[in-house]
Amino acid sequence: MSYSEKVIDHYQNPKNVGTLDKAKSNVGTGLVGAPECGDVMRLQIEVDHSTGMITDAKFKTFGCGSAIASSSLATEWLKGKSVDEALTIDNMDIVEELNLPPVKIHCSVLAEDAIKAAINDYRQKNGMEQIKFEESVVH
Amino acid sequence: MLKLPIYLDNNATTQMDPRVLEAMTPYFLEHFGNAASRNHPFGWEAEEAVDYAREQVAKLIGADPKEIIFTSGATEADNLGIKGVYEMYAGKGNHIITATTEHKAVLDTCKHIEKIGGEVTYLQVNAEGLIDLAELEAAIKPTTILIAIMYANNEIGTIMPIKEISAIARKHGVLVFTDGTQAVGKIPVDVNNDGIDLMAFTGHKMYGPKGVGALYVRRKNPRVKVTAQMDGGGHERGMRSGTLNVPGIVGFGKACELCMLDMEADTKRISKLRDKLETALLLLEEAYVNGSREHRLPHVANISFKHVEGEGLLMGFNKNIALSSGSACTSASLEPSYVLKALGLGDDLAHSSLRFGLGRFTTEEQIDYTVKAISETVIKLREMSPLWEMYKEGIDLSTIEWAAH
Image 1 (cartoon, one colour):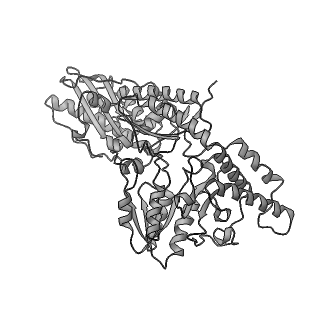
Image 2 (cartoon, rainbow over the protein chains, first blue to last red):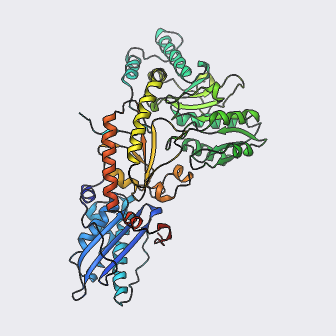
Image 3 (cartoon, helix red, strand yellow):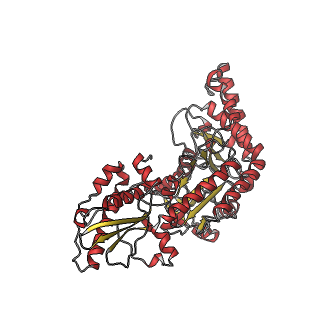
């Protein structure tokens, strides 16, 4: 299977690899996937409390090139968005942007799940109700 | 100058030796006859060439030329050997014993036999990939007609104790079939010394052409017969109909002859390179060899790099190094290698493995390049791996409740 150029580029030059301090109240962390399934994504957002804007986003991913690229792209898209806007990121946008083949769609689903999980973590930390998402179909 | 890409997937297939191609060439153009044409020189030449190749092939495994049945490859030979025995010995019983780490050509053939009324026992293997001989003997019943255990495994290179297996089989009057695909031509295999009754092997794993292989069928002590799986002209003593692939067979014969001549020198050189590769890669933290290191093919190494996913790892260098991974993230099932799982490896380690298959044309320069490229990629991907970070923080990953999906 050959990867798209965009996947290769994100794999070779991943954006925003790293770790934010998960103890901070303005940092939301989403950890999704499982080692048994061959991919684990951790996505973190840092939110400006006063504006509700995402000021920073970081990821670390264990997985194939498409999983790495999906999370790298997600962090790029998250920065500068408000938390509410971030909720509108759909996995199919990632599929389209990265040209993911059908067997790799689960990577984009995982990235969407990671975004939602990070937002919910942030909301919970700050006394907001968790948003209930429809069960996503992964794998 | 190092030429890229580097080929280290010799368990999948090997580059043909130029000496093999040279032997084959005349049989495409000048000597194109059908080996079954008895009435003219074209047929005679072809038959003579096939007879000579049959001797070359037989010699490599210590067999008589009459015991070699040419096939289209190892998969066909696996099918013919197992299904052929099942049908031929139906009057004696319907039970076959095999192992969980066999190649799909054997496992799926056994599954087929179960569907048509046969009974199959699948033996488990230990962490090294070896079956338990006491367990094997205990599995034998009055209805057992065949033990089908591979000579050496294609993913981890573990060599099974075939001689001990056949001694047990003999004691109980059971036939022994072995898939010798990865072993023949690489290590000494002798059908009489090893007590093998049937063996499948193929040309393209030993620097010969694709599309040609053989089934060894013992003719004496005991005389073994298999029921043909294809109807036709009754070629190959009635066991495998179909016009013989003369150029392929000539190439297969030449490849066997070269393996016999070069085996000692090849093994010495290749195992040294394999050990160099392995030693260097094991310097990385949390890197583990899968399968037996003691009972192993000289050219194979299967290594897991914990907390890095195999397919992601391959992507770091697969433009320049051809390797295979035990991770199957491309398939819908996302199931990692069943062979690695049979060793008792967790899915995480099975997902983190690379299989190295060195060969006759592997050079030290290639190994040095490979070590460097893989080490760099492993380190880079671990920097990116949340599992590695947790491991470094001392978090026990098995205590984490992973999101179900």
